[in-house]
Length: 266
Image (cartoon, helix red, strand yellow):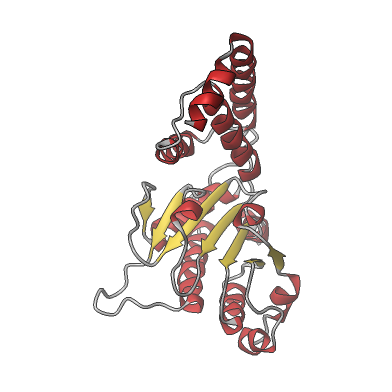
């Protein structure tokens, strides 16, 4: 067995399939079956409406172990907290300024990141997908280019498309057709680290009076996109938070905090 084949489970095991607010339990089972067929085993469910369920087990068709091991959480933040790279799926091109790729390019990107730690591939609700706020937590957006005259793709089928592309890309790696990138030498920041940084950044910008109540959402969205492109590692994020802490202390000493609080009340 080649080294590439031998490390396959280690890389694929770093990839989690995350389903948000799934309405029909059968779709959870179908997703689990699609995952197991392509060699993925980590399933995370964000507030499923009905789970566990016999309907999910019926459509899992032998992937019951994935259902039994599925992690159920309350929020997307919790689902991706330990991941350093998050991909959001969308049935349509959205008004969120994220890099947009097709499934094949997405699979290449995911596998290039998976050797360095946890990856989340997120699927939204059956009826309305992911919210813009949820997509803002992602580094990449993937869109399946379906027939524009009939673009409906159910959840199980969408998971099958994405996991198939992941499998095919990995097979290309094992055959030596595509090199597997070496793991990063620096420790990447987890999504939990990044979200804490954004909270700290928002608090500090309010504290110094930079954010106005009417425009803070747009500004924070732009800052998220900027830092999402940069993707600071854990040490760099610690430096940035240290700067924010010192800025906050200076604002307190100079009276800027009180001025900003009064401005926010107006």
